[in-house]
Length: 78
Figure 1 (tube, rainbow, N blue to C red):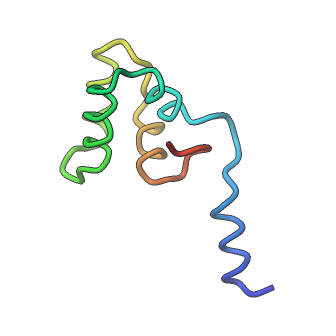
Figure 2: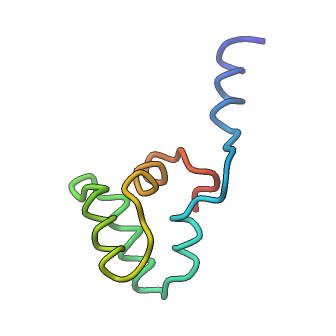
């Protein structure tokens, strides 16, 4: 097996509990889900800002969960 094959396997397998952000997106209305997706995609919006906004609206959204989701390192990126 080549290193490239091993890296593909490791990056394809996402272990651990379901991503908190993926689960949250499924509960949001269409407008809020679109706004959150836009914030995730916008490099000028920090993960900390997203976390604070979500928590202000009553969602549990630790900064590290937001960062993992944005980086595609979560278990089940939506």
